[in-house]
Length: 120
Image (cartoon, rainbow, N blue to C red):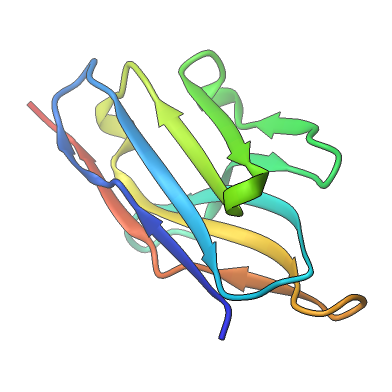
């Protein structure tokens, strides 16, 4: 069974860094797109960064210059390096991945979320 699993959240002080990981487990044919979203209490999820199958990246304006996305294709894992964190970055962060378990069977998959709290 294919799963999307986030890790790396936690509590940090303003200005500090965290690295989130998003691992796709299980046997798959292809990992196409991957993105990170965040959700504030009682709000809809919002895009943090999106990477398409070609590696093009779209960042939310609020994180440009502070957050960096990368992928390890061999490990089917994506990373979100978050630097100079601010209290406004406090949210639950979700990984979203477009996966083909077998060729032609594309599906959109979400992880369970990981809490990031930035507070002094």
